[in-house]
Image (cartoon, rainbow, N blue to C red; front, side, top):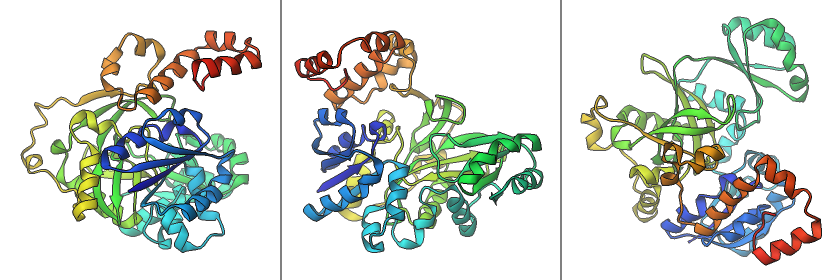
Length: 388
């Protein structure tokens, strides 16, 4: 079995080669990240100078090899493929959906809201806005505060929480670039339910609660994880319904808000993996066996019999930090036992990522800038690193 990973920036690629290797895949990568050449689980790295060139490179590689799994890890590249002039048949082979009927919600918050609403899946009330007056009207109709979101954005960028009409002026420049989503704010607990689907069927997911983010509305750096045996069986049913509605055929980054009445409103379903894709191995919910089970016998994920009698009153969730998003001082002093949760199967790659994190300290970066270019090249060859 052969898998092809695609991502201009490498941070969502780093854990996938080790995971896919445990399943039994041989892995090739299309990326600009030279760090990936250090991975012991990657056969070949095909360089691309810009995300816009990814589609052509994918087509070239598909002409050479019959990959059984193609995983795109970047929203921009997903959108590039959707908007390309290649046939829908080839797009469906590349994209993580089962048919062209599901292209509308790929990298589109507006498309996702329409898809969820049409499928009867709980999602916040929303409006599509194209001008300032519509933004002001949406603020009134949805009751402030209201989230205003750039249609194609990721990592929490392009998200604005507004409460007053005067604040809507912030959106003028953004609205010139295209429509935005105005979304009701649901008050409750944010839950990440990122999952893997094949042919719209649930194969694996994780249940975690973000505790700390890198920046406001940004990616999480610290999470509480719950093993699946403690997860409400209703969530399995909701995700099964969600996977069918999305026509999902790959990794999906899923977020919802759970209100105090236990109703969950789904707010995010990005058709790609996230930076936590392989952290479930630390809580006994490794995705690799579930993927192998699907490949062998089309086995899907169902609630554990233990979950019916779960006792959350005595269970303590597992606090896990993301080692690359943890402040350097916290990493050095092993705060929150961060060393325990470093996925270290791919030793050379993880080591170089940690080394990169250290040398990006402002003081060391300042010194680095004084090293002449020719000397940096010599040091690269001598140290065999791609960092300096």
